[in-house]
Image (cartoon, rainbow, N blue to C red; front, side, top):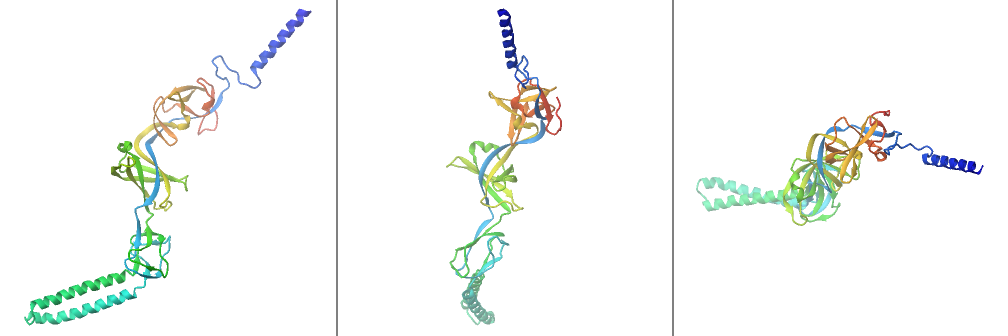
Length: 356
C-alpha cells in the first residue's frame, strides 16, 4: 500500500512539472528555437528613386540687398514719409529736411551764373570783331563754367534735402525722428530686399572637392519646422579661412513668397552627389549589428536575415548597393521580435489585410 502511494505521488509531481514547463497562453517553440505562432509584421518593397549624398551645415540667413540710407546734407527732419515694414522703390523719397537755406544758396548761385552768362554774351560779338583781348574773353568763359559748376553743386545739395531710397526693398530700420537735426553721413534708414536671400556656409577644406557652384540645397528654420525651402550654391570662395580651415560657400535662396527673413537661423542640406534610379529602402528597416547591415526578407510566410551593402543615406531612405532585388519584401515594422526563420503574418504598408 505504501509503494502504491509513492508511485501516485511521483506521477502527480511529474504531471505538475510538465504543465509548468508549457505555461498558459505561450506560443510553443520548436527544436530550432523559432516560434510556431506567426508574428504580425509590416513589409515593403524596395523603391527605385534618385538619391543624393548630402552635407549638413548651419548658419544665419542674410540679404545681399541690404543698404543703409545716409544723409548727404545736414539739416532738420521736417517730414517722415515711410515707416518700418513699408515697401519702397529705388529713388523714393523717405523723408524731407528743412532745405530752405540750401534752396536760397541754389538761387544765389543761379543768379550769379545768369549774370556771368549775360556779360559773356555781350562780349561775344566784340570778341568776334577783335575789340577785346583774347585773354579777357577766355577769362569770362572760364568764369561762366565755374559759376555753372557751382550752381549745379548747390542744386544737387538742395535735392539731397529729400532723403531717397538707394535700393528697392522693405524699410527694415528708421533711425531718425521728426524734428531731429542730423549730420552729413548719418544713417537715417535701412532698406532690405527680402526677395533674394543669401547664406554663407563654412565648409571644411577636406570636403572642398565635393562642392561646386550650381549644387542644389534645402533648408529648414525653427519657426516653420514642417517646411523645406530650396536653395542653390551660387559661388564658392577660392581661398581658405586660415583661422578655422574652412572655405565659404554662398547659397542663394529665392524668397519671393516672403516666408523667410534675414536673421533666421537655418539648417542646410547640400546635395553634392546624385545616384539616379537607385534601389532604396526605409532606414527603419535596417539592422545594425557587429559592423554589418542586414534586413529581414519575407518568403512564403517566413523571414530570413540577409546582409546588404549600403551606399548613400539620405533623410529616411538608404541606397542598397548589393543584397536585395526589387521584388524582395523586407520587414519595416516588427523586426525586433524576429529571428532568422521566424514565421510571420506579413502586411504590405499599402495593404489592408495580413497574408501568411
